[in-house]
Structures are given as structure tokens and as C-alpha cells.
Image (cartoon, rainbow, N blue to C red; front, side, top):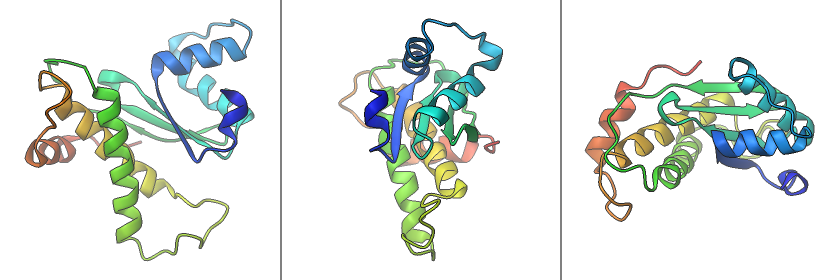
Length: 163
């Protein structure tokens, strides 16, 4: 996995996957939860500094990491899930929609900044859309029925600001 990261702009995973990848990469070392996000940032920042690592964290939202730092940390809205099936795929679809919606609305050319082709505001928009679509999706039984645009928008508007 680590050898492939350098070829990716984004790698999206859940917190369990991030924990296991980092644990394996650090020879089995376990880090306490309080320092876990910074540990992920450090590990992936060393392994593939230019890749945005997006980690979904269930009821805690999602975090974006790059170059050993936290780019953005997006909280979410607490809900009682009906069915978590497809939550990660829903988050990913929302995230991709969010960054490309930002790009479409941006006056900045795609190649204007080769050093940072996806600025923080694009990543935040992706995280917000991802969290909104993921939250809306877990309120529906089964993964084959998508949430309505109104449900997604309701969650997106209720999200706390990203830090």
C-alpha cells in the first residue's frame, strides 16, 4: 500500500484502516487515541507527503492530512444510524463531489499552483459534502437507495465549521 501512495492525489480510508496501516508501518507500535491523528499525519507525511490522506471517523467526522499536518478536521452531526452499509462509499462520493464542485466554482486555474493543486477550502468543501452524504446514507436501510438531495443539504447546513 505504502509504495502506491506516491501515485495518488487522495487516499480515503476509515479510522480502523488508518490505524492498521500505521501500526503495520511502525512495526506494531500502538499510539494512544489522544495522539492518533497526529501520528497518522506524521506517518503518512513521511510515507507520501504529497498525497492527501482522508480518514473517516464515524460519528467524529473526518480528517484530511498532508505533509505531516492536519489540513482540516470536520465534525459531523450525531444521528442514530439505521444501517451503516455504504457509509464509506457515500462519504467518498460526497467528498469527490465537494472538491469538484469547489473546482467548478473556483476562478483559479487547475494548474495555477502545482505545489498545492487542492487548497484547504477545496478539501474542507469535500469533507463537508462527504460527511453530509455519509450521515444521510446511514439513515436509510440498505445501500441501494440514495439519500435525497434535501436530506444531504439539511446535514451539510447543520455541520459545524471545520477546524
